[in-house]
Image 1 (cartoon, rainbow, N blue to C red):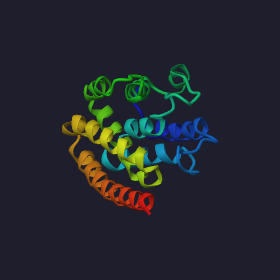
Image 2 (tube, rainbow, N blue to C red):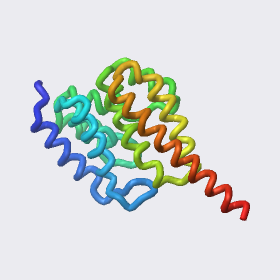
Image 3 (cartoon, rainbow, N blue to C red):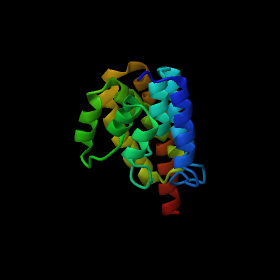
Image 4 (cartoon, helix red, strand yellow):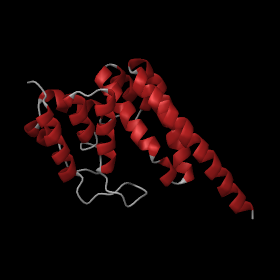
Length: 179
């Protein structure tokens, strides 16, 4: 089945419903702001309805959310469901997870857009979390970057910006602890 803009619109609505009442981990922002940003990045760098739809849906199968793969399959074409399932983090081993992503260029684009959206909000996170995420996200991006140069370049730009913010916050936190 051909994935159309109507599927992306349906994914947007599904995302709103699936994440209704949920907030981002360290802020009061609605959780849906994250998948909306991922979909926006994918629309900007890819533009395909398949990528945009998967961007809206990329987190609905993860722990803490109530959507099942069967529900997703009932609502969307197989191509969307397969992409969402591929980027959903079931693996506890980061290297295996990244290896699974690397087999699919669309999954690489989706994951890098997800990394960008997460890194953009790191200044809202606790300093210790920011450091761990910066490290993990750089590893993931470096493993996938050769699959998608424009998005990878955008990720590195945002990563460097957030790293500077982290260093400033970390130095400020240390200074406060010493006073």
